[in-house]
Image 1 (cartoon, one colour):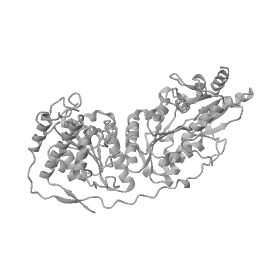
Image 2: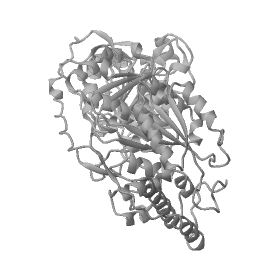
Image 3: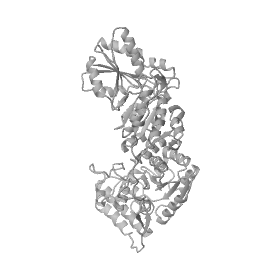
Image 4: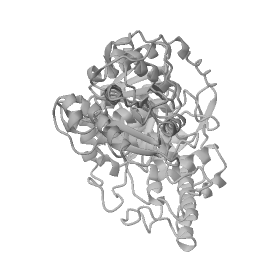
Length: 622
């Protein structure tokens, strides 16, 4: 192991004050930011970075380095200041904060090599830290994960989802610190400086909790020692601090959240007051171990070893079931593949993976936000996580999914029981917005298989495609229409029926593919030919095939989807052909549905084969 300097308390105090000054200078230069939120956390950051964390500032992504998440992302300037102090980059760069040409953004993003996940949407950092801590177990590393939270974000429900999940998984390699400065954005926080209010709650959730003076470096270091010695459960350090600590004009005063100090007298006075607190020290720093040479990355998995689907044409299999089988098989080939569940594994069929690879299956119970947050953390450290739940319940975690997009992490979402085709459970269970939600995430691949073969093939394609991805699976059993050797590249589609006499193109995905095929047969009896396309890749969509088909069929496309009209397949197709002389007529669910049998629901809400026939017939007459 190589050596890293651990600073004595007197030197740490000087570092804390330099972090304050750097935060003030950066935000004053930017003309925006949160200096007072940084100032309260200065001793916490100094003691962590220069007395506790094992890391290499020149290789922050080292596989075995301790991890740090700044959940209170608005305090980004002090995070950047700490890394500059450690030597990761030149301190002068701090003055580029929030500039369009700088990666030192207003809230941290993984554009910076020392940021694992984007933060700034409060309540997410602890969830992501759970994934980072779980990953240490996955790779057999002894690194620890630390997360700094704000007291205001303790009001977020996702924090308490994470609290129970971390205890369930026994994450004694996880240490959280709450900066209890008692002031939120618009008023005092819920519990102010009543420290036992915080401690009682964390202890009730099963955490080891300690209360310390957050400006007492000795107390903070003792708390870290205690956390490392605690086995079988995570630790929460509740650090009582003063917002704006170090500048008497603002210290502990409301109304200073998100307000930089003015250039000139105000900023100069703040810096001068803090500089007056520097002390001379003759104490000698000691050397502590840091990660040694980075381990060699594991060899890339050979997805060519994935067995071909074993289904026969005509078999009836739900795509959700095929998803589970494929995921389990993929896990046998690629040890970086992990699965997360929210207590519906017997419906999404992710329990197939659990039976095959229990050590890489993480149960979160009915807590979708922490499931997605943990998946983000796992993905940030090289895992390929597949979180699965009912598609409608992923909307609970939509903000986490949004932040996963900003982080561009390799999370592969799966949402089952989508659309009115689930039947009698009714509208609360029918995801009819999920395609819109996932398509809105930049760089997110969105896939919607119609049969078991395409589902299995697309699970592999998801894993092999960098960045976030989403697969929509269905509850009903559907016929297998593809042979086992059929390829399904991301961005492709399948033309299932075609002729030179086609008068319209019908584009479908998932369960509506079979409605389109049934409509094809019905129209054939009347001497009308249509082209049928399975648009299994909703994003990116196969523009070339859509344009060519639209041109070949009189400029007429009909889309049919088990989804609301906004944001789904119809919008994707319309966008793809917008600059072509092609009309797009969209069949979609256009009102809040009710319980019923799948077939009668599809007929009632306008997406059945009969509605496809009626649409084509009517459009031909225009």
